[in-house]
Image (tube, rainbow, N blue to C red; front, side):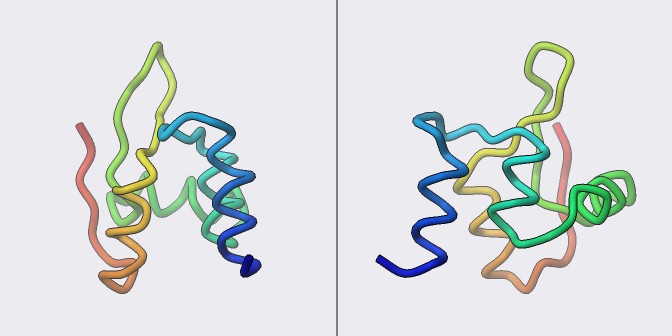
Length: 74
């Protein structure tokens, strides 16, 4: 299993929705970097779940494959 696959498996923790901290870990970014991207609307697509932002693993992967630019928020 590759390092990327290991990180993805760890980040998922059984749910397709990752927290901001898990998403940053999965992408290899600092939490602060992801927070800045999110605030600027340039991070992966995010959804509000119970008062906190959650990122679906498929949206994270799509954002990454697209070169990591742009992003919409629900």
